[in-house]
Length: 173
Image (cartoon, rainbow, N blue to C red; front, top):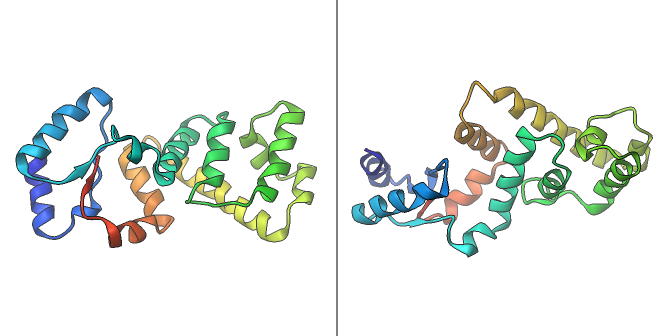
């Protein structure tokens, strides 16, 4: 069934629009075998070069931060990822405040009354507010959309899908 659906998309020239998410790494082998048998090119998350791509690390950080607001390291990775590319001089004051107050970075990001915001330039405040708004928006989708759909909306909103479509000649799994 999966390979038939993908085969239809390949015929339409839409292979670059497909990503397969599996609940467990144990399922990757079965899916990969089916794709090989159907002659569908793909890149697997088991390929170390794939896992280490900044975009993939950013996706992992995004999904982690969505469900765990206390994941300060994940939030830092998301801020630095290709999806936001925030300069360190905007992030460091927030991170310092989080460490000094022993609070998650997320709490500082969402605390508009914190004096730390005075140390960030106007452009940085606007960008960080955008990140905060994004997290709020995508968290609101939890329970109404599956993780793949939320991720798709995130990538689409960050215009990363358009960027990737130009270079993709294989399925990402």
